[in-house]
Structure formats: C-alpha cells, structure tokens
Length: 372
Image 1 (cartoon, rainbow, N blue to C red):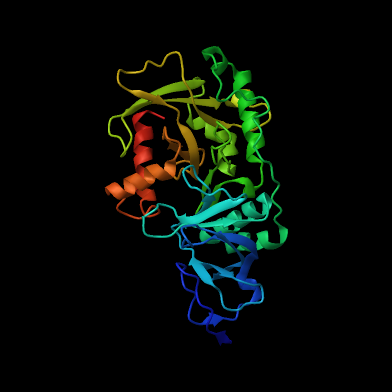
Image 2: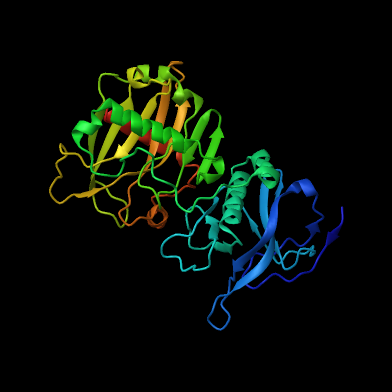
C-alpha cells in the first residue's frame, strides 16, 4: 500500500484525506470527466471547472473524488456520500443553467451542508452517474459495479404518454366504471413499468419491500414498479371485487409550514380478476376531480401526485399484499422545499430515514381510517 500527500484542496471544498490510498480497480464504481460549479465566487462570479471524477466504494463507505487530471493521485476534493445524501435533478429556483447538470447533496437541506452541482458531457452520461451514485448510496454495490460495464441508459427526452391512457384529463364517471377503460389504463401502466431500472428516479428492494418512484416533472400520471406479489391475482381476493372504484375525501386541518389546510380528492380504482384477461391484475391510483366531490368553503383543491409505493407481503395471509403509497401534496411544485421548511420548523427533528418507519405507521393508520 503506497500513500502520497499534497495537492491543495480547492477553496471552499471538502479537503481530501491527508493520506491517499492507492486505489484498486474494483474499488472504482465509475469514473469520467464532468464539470463542477465552483464553491467560491471569483470577483462575484461562480465558474465551472472541468474535473476527473472517480466514485469509490470501500465497504459501506462511498466517496466521490475529483481530480484536475486523470493521472493525478492527489484529489482536489472529495464528497463523502452518506445515507442521507441523494443525486437528484436540478430543481426550480436553483440557478444552474449548464446543460446535463444534476445536484449531489443532503436529502433534506440543513442550510449548512454544501450542495454540489455537476454537469456531464451528455444526458446519457448524467443519468448513468445519478443511477450509479444512487445505487452506491443505497448499499447495492453489485448493481453499481454492473453499471460500469453493462449499463447503457436508453434515453428519451420526454417519457411518452401511456398509449391508451387518459390519466390527467377530465374523465367522466361512466368511464371510471367502464371495465374496458380501466383495463386499458392498467395495460398502459404495465408497459411503463417495464422500463429499465436506470430510468427510475429511485428504486430499492430490501427485506422483501419494493420501493419505486419517478419524477413528475414531465408526466401527470402515477407510474408504479410492480413486484411478484403485486402481480399475483390472489392479491385481488383481499379487496372487495364488486366495487370498481371509490372516491375518498380527506381534509387536512393541520398544514405544513407555508401551506394552508386543503382538500384532497383521490380516486382508488382496481381491475377485478374477471376483467384481467391476460392474467395480470392489480391496482391503479390516480388523483381526480370527480362530479361527486364538493369542495368545502375556504378550502383549496389540489392534485395528489403519487411519488412512490411500498409493497410488502402480509404476514397474516399469503394471499394478501400490504401497500403504502406516498403522495406529494405541494401546490408550489417542490417537495424538497416543503421538507426544508418542515426541517427548519422542527417538525423533522430526526433523520429522514430514521423517521421512515414512523411515517409508514402513520400512513397505515390513515388507510385504516378510510377503510382501504
């Protein structure tokens, strides 16, 4: 093992380790050129520096190093990626104009930790970097290493609308009750879930729990990644097959900081076993304005955007699957901003991940209240 020292860190950057360990090839999950937004303004202006990035994993530790040249052994800086970090798209309000850019920072901005902005040479390279960093943070090194040699992200600038879908449009009650229309929606949903894992904003599977979610920047409908249990027709036996859909009204009297109390109208619809001609069955959840929904005075009607779904086998019965869906309710279009305000107000006093189990329990209680 050889070590070297030196290489002054760039101003405002996290300093590299005092001793740099000679890297073995299998420690490198991904490497390549990208530009990084400087951490300190020069004459009042921020600038972009081209750097050689190298994503390293040693055991549970994941670090993104960057160098001035490929041959350099001393990094100019490093970003230690802990479990509360995330690689994400540039959000509204962030003044980053460079193409093919993404951000690396805390899942919930604490106001003290720097967010790094990187710009890649192509959109394909950007998505591959984001996917590899995400896989490494989530503790799936095999999947991250596999990307290095086999992953080729199939890019589309904009995800196409479901072939026969009318999700997001004004749909009549008669269509909701039409089994053929529901079947078309379900088939289109299944087509979308067959996309490569790389095109999902976030995906993980741990201890029998499958979690998947996609960005809603381009498409107005919910896309759910299915697992084996959810596709099993036996799941439908735990749901009343006589009802095609249910309109749920729920009034949030206590709002998050910066948000007013609001009304939420959610349509729950499922395909019954009799309508599932091809052996695929399951549930579809959308946000909808319905003719039977009456808005209360001084309340705000907003759409519920599904940002994730958790599927887990029910331990009490092999023919049931427990499902928790995560919905984004934010009229300003920024879940991150909402979480930031919640964090500053003290509502999120614990880490986001450590609070997840509590969140699941709260959602489960809510589902029981509305008699899911």
